[in-house]
Image (cartoon, rainbow, N blue to C red):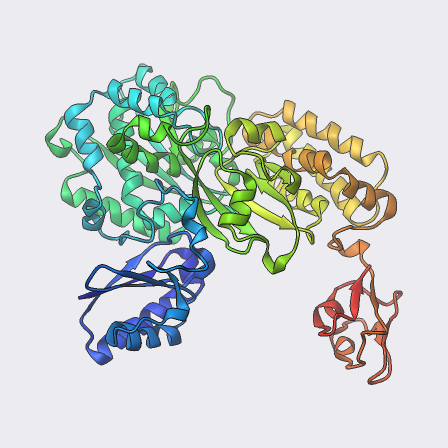
Length: 588
């Protein structure tokens, strides 16, 4: 019997996968087709959603991309019923495909089950080795042995800080206290980042199992998932997974016949970016306003309800069971000297193949952008990547051969962060990009620190002045002074890293600031206040489409003759540029 899988991660649903699934169901019912129909999460190829996989009786897989309901009907009729694959729509199978290079340089540990198993089925997770690691740990390992294995693997926390996971667990294990907690930080808030969301939607049991192993290692019997409420599908599948684990006796008392007890709850966050910081997250779970506090004491000694608490993010926990089953050496054999294993990146922005990619540490930026991401959309020129989200920084294309690990990325002024990688092309204004991220952090500041609350606002005002064509020569020095005052005088990571996008763009793209301030020009033709439009007489056909599109009636001319733009009336909305089919309207 054939098996059909439809990807129903958030990316798939937004692309129309639910309608595709319904079309498959209708075809099955109408033709009484004997198949097994399953839902999966995202396999990382978000750029090809909706995805539909057909697995024949010989376990031969055919993955179809961009599957509309109409395409699904044809696949059902010709492939599922007629045993004749629709070759032009196949994006991955045993034969060559244009999308094969997306996976060639990946090494999938965290994403090993994503897009393959049904995230709503504990049986499917167990069929691929799920919950074997926790059983092995409970039968064969002491808590100290578990911590030793994780330490020797070299796994660093994947939430952004990059602290050695095993050392963090050891601190909490050694902390004195009659009660200890464990928290999974799933408060993923960086613009362009969706690694944790997709992992929870596609393989929630792997994260839960990783938490269980950590709880055993540090001596905790209670845990929390802190998930932002904007991730409804992740929350739904997580709740279902917890119910399944409880029903099997994998959670609760005397798990797998041992003395280990563990229960877990879900706390839905309201979406405050600052709650990604450990102490603010803890305050939120306790029902307080999500604001960071000074450290020490660190959460490992005094965390949730003043008890020793260990916090790791989704990706960190998803690595744990693989390390236990495959050994610390297998994980440590990948990556660089100080950054072991793999890292999941969310590829977004002007990249041709946006999605999720899990790669060994040490891969270069160019390899991710070109070999995995397929280069830049529409053949435009690669300009930069933003790594680490609002807390990170812009790395120019000239540094594309830089190997990605914690130390090398930190040297650039950016940070690894949780794994967001936003790609920019020649049409991206770097001053405007810095303004975008600073506006985000200014808006998300909790307000506790004066330098963060007021300083980010002052920096944003300067950037707005520059992009409006009103910049002053002294603005660059003012931005740097404000940036270092904020970095050196704030409590938490949000404030300390908020200036990074500005500092890195000042460092690598100083000529763009100069053009905005001195020449009152935006080299990328992106800042509306600094862009003017004109019509090339040799290219204009006099079709008058731009006249109809112009809201300020700034364009005039006779039919079938070259038109002109009255600069005095033009409001620089760009409608004429977007409407012209003959490339007659140009930006100046």
